[in-house]
Image (tube, each protein chain N blue to C red):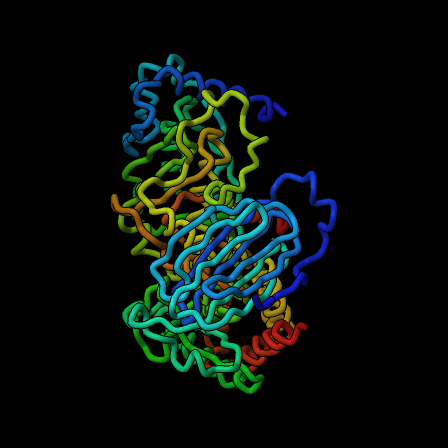
Length: 363
Length: 198
């Protein structure tokens, strides 16, 4: 057995773990990329070691855990199934395509991300050069495209053209920082919102940045704002589905409670969980949003509309920090004019690039 | 102070009514947006014994500053059924604001087709095609239109905790940017911003 990750994972429980209740662990898997990703979200901090056995990858924790779902089977050449062994270990049964395992951890909430590298045939087209690519990937998403023009300024500037222009400029700057940049679209075409997120997941991006321009009925509205996902819409659902609802909080009189949860029964379980993927990355997303908004304000002197949250569809399924920039109002004649100026556009993307550098340079 | 006391009272009443109509619990209750409130008052339903009693409600319109919701107080007929109350509130929203500092919440000619209120706290408002086709394409306007509806309904009707939006009878995945695939809870930060800027 080769120990991949010894007890480095947030050593805080120690011996006190004995009498405690089992720690809830949400298990999520994603096979949409070149590797198979498993994300374990822990209700509490716990020390875990990741070890490799022939045919298995084991995550052994130093306290009792209860996984939800407790087990699962996948149609995947890299990861066949997962399940529990005893009350402290999660076992991933690897398939024929499995080669190696990488892990990293995230905080608030405590998450262990396990990337199972390998090869699978036919199921999905491999990401361009994904296996060879050593540099981290950032996905930029130029909003709108094709017949879906987005907002239109009073002088005729179209949002879809400006978002692509800004994204291409930003790509050049970011690649100088030593990252690979993938644009969700590099031409004028329609691209569904869910596909944009899928491109980021598929490329195992470390950041997803969607670029938009705003519009308002009020012509004088102006300024820039940066959004991360609002999850109030989905928190209760997430907890219910993840099995993390504390039973102690249930009403004693079960008859007085509605018989079925409020979740839409017509949606498959998997679909709902996929919609909630971004929930695990909100802390990092808000940090990225703050950094970008601060840089935009300083560099452009544009009216600061602040960091905000909204249930934007394009952010929901992203399995990495994800934000949406509304760089300005093209419905405002002055801001529209400003965005026709190359120097101003460069100023905007330079500000975003500086913010990204401050985030990715973090140890 | 009075309002604080009234809210649980209305809630209890709602619960009693819900309990009375126990057998069709699962079925949504469609309520036509027309007739307007005045006609509803003239033709009282069986449950409205004193239909002319008025209640004041708080409506939320996009503020003229363009980045928040502005509150406006209106009187509606004090019907107790959440769907009746909700239809009146949306009719008043569709009429448009009466104060300066507030803008219409909807594109011109938008109408409400139906409103359902379910026992699980979800309400579903079905608007005419103009709701979407007349929009500017900006997320700022999208947010204010959607939360004018969601915040106005949830603030005044305790039985409604989330609002789903349909357009021309169909579910929509998004309103351009915002996810509309599931009912939304109110965004209270939008109203807070309005107060801060006043």
